[in-house]
Length: 185
Image (cartoon, rainbow, N blue to C red; front, side, top):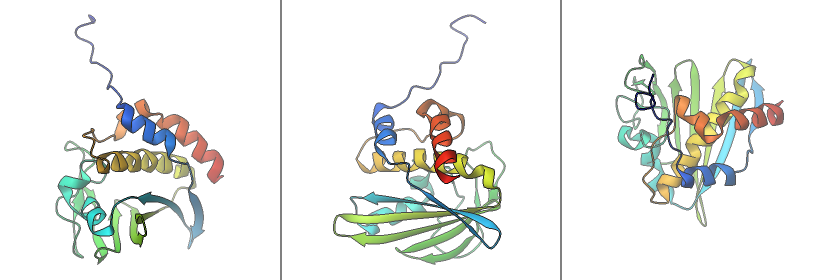
């Protein structure tokens, strides 16, 4: 294969890379009723009413999240999600929707619970990701770490590409996974 025919490696965005490096790798992991709950929080300098659409609107989710739903996640009921258009659809049923405080939905066999709390400087976003396999802890934490960094970068007004799948490796996902595997034991 000639040099011209080789696909170019995705270029990383320095703004996203800096945000990934700046965000602490703080997360907790707890076993609850035989499943694992990974909890991550991020302080955002934006009010909950501005953050809520980033959690529920398909076009806004597709700017930062691996969850790309087929409908707004703003009401209880069935939905499907695809990380990329070529992926098979996964269950994304909304189980709880209490705008702009709480959203609970499936992501395949996983459960995602998003809560927003107002703070004097904006809001506190908390993600509780429930899954079955303990070995997945670092993988999921690293993925959400990257996704939440992209969310913060988008909120800062930067136009950046969503970082999902293999693209996350270009942003240090493997190192983050190792750090989370160690810290979450």
